[in-house]
Length: 466
Image 1 (cartoon, rainbow, N blue to C red):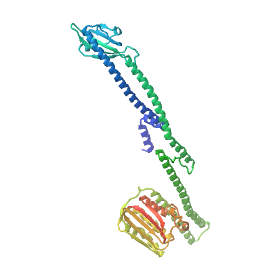
Image 2 (tube, rainbow, N blue to C red):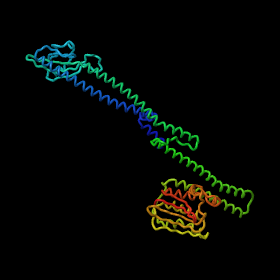
Image 3 (cartoon, rainbow, N blue to C red):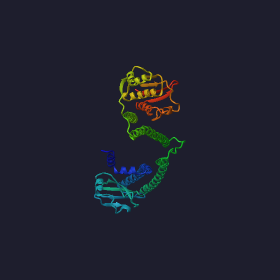
């Protein structure tokens, strides 16, 4: 399945609500998150306050009802005239539910259901409320019914007290809580919005400034305050560093393309010139042979340049490395062997000082890297070439020194750049990729390369973990 298809499948599998949520602006999402969270917190706090007040009011109401119910029972047993405090009511029922006596407030109102009457007649006290909190009827009641055994009969005494003050207090509390929660929610949402805007304004400024990069503007940097050290400020500094690296990489790419074009143009121009001369008029076999040799030389130069560029591209990562243990003296000797004949023809010597031991490296790349160092020393120096190599503390340290004039001082900082060549060597063979290749091999192994002048010549060192 292609990446696009996989992304489409993941999008389809994602809940529709989540997809819509993620498409909302960040500020709106933050405000909604604050609003929902505050709503839950305020609802919980309001519910707790309401429950505590309701409990206190119910305890007081139940205490009043209990006292009145006790007094009513005593009066029924004593045969006294029935009554009660203000806001109270009573009914005396037969076990069949017929009203024997009642206060004016409930004289015709049926306070108990048939099932409740049966339960009380069986000896169970019953409590119930008449009317709900939302009801505006001032005669909402809370009652307690109990069986009273008289000498000659059994009756049911129902004592009731009004709940109006209790319900009104709770309704007022709900209204005040709703107003307070609404105002708090609006204030919290506004503060959350302003905070989110203040936090994300630097990001928007970064975005607007970075948008100018699309116009090809160079030297663009994000407006990062220097007197802060928060997450967004650090992000801004990181992005500015990234922009610097991008500009440097773009500049190196431009230089690389310019140098590559120059290096390729020269052999191609020579090839064209040689062929034009050869085709201009009939030539003797000897001249054609010389022309073909010249063409072959330039073609080989193009092949070498192309291979060097491909090698450098391949060395862009470490996935291709195949490390293996190899004897260090044997590694150096095998890399130097192809160059001894050329050194002998020039009456020069190459000496090796390799400490005994083994190293864990990719010999496929180390060999040509050492070869490039020796080839550079042969072409750009004179006298003796000396190679030292040691393997200690898990690192391979290799140095090639010569007895030549050394590197020009202004060339040392860019010695490992691609196509970098000292002016004195511009007319000599070479593409300027040798030291760049050495640095790439060292970097791919997790190491470094360094060039310096020793006072008697040049020295190039490679330090890599092994």
